[in-house]
Length: 265
Image (cartoon, rainbow, N blue to C red; front, side, top):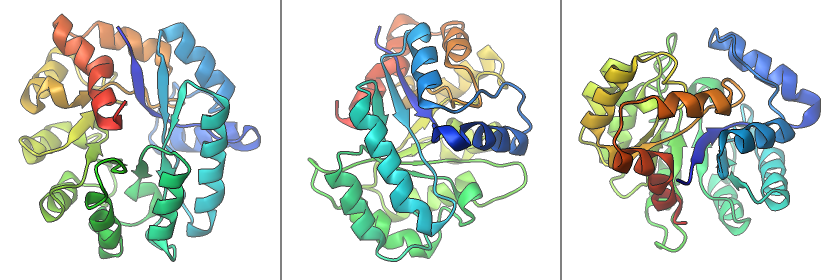
């Protein structure tokens, strides 16, 4: 069975530990690892993961291009990496950055409203969403949103639902089952919506039977495996995934087949 880890983060060596510590501190997590490329590749290999999707976040508009260039380089050097790009609502010429992302063979865009300090439904992003949804099928890429936060509503599932209705052809992945820390609310808001959902940073917090209930509500054909490295160890997350009460078809869909469909592999 092919496993694609749809949710990982890495950082340049000199800031990898500091960046990982800061994120774990924000979310009050204690399992964090150093967020280096080499450690991710090592842990994914042990876990039996064949591909890892890299999801960068630019917290400042002026850092967008350098971060995208870092991911481009990592993807080119390591065949197991599938890189996404980042954009920022405050940057000029955001659509030019999208073209750069696509022409550089990156595979999608990551937005993290709570870290980037703008809401999912910020109207500065509407030209981005419209541009992405109207790309030719051969060039269409997904956008993955961090969703859910205990102290902010910038990434609330209600905001995502608004965007899904405003831009119905946008290819969307809602991270963390659509609402980290507010899982029950997220499922109630987003069930029946035309998007995908990853289970990163979910399996530790949600009992297996309850998580299976959420998967059933969304449909296994819309769920993606993700570890959220370096917040979590991919080896342990794969173990938690195998412990879920799924049948063989559901497990194969979530492990990799749905990701192949989203990514056009």
